[in-house]
Image (cartoon, rainbow, N blue to C red; front, side, top):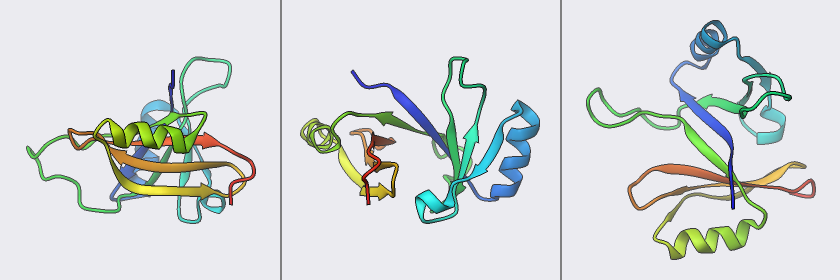
Length: 131
């Protein structure tokens, strides 16, 4: 069984989003751009010894839906043991590739998919050898 291990928030104004989430929830932000190859802020949402997951904040890559045009939401990422086998199951079940498998150098394999309803989610296989 696979669990949600990470969430992502897309923002039109990253600095404004950092200020909001920092003030509203006390979240802290770490520059993870070196690992991702593009501007990306890791979100620390609480102490490691408490239940919960951490996330990420990035520049929105496309316009958000207009008001009253559907959900504008966080993207959750699911931890998997075998990226390629999980991708086959996703595709066989009717999912589609949204952003293909990529290496988060020295950390993991990451990719994004659409479920049959058009919802985006990520999968993440830790691998310190990812290049």
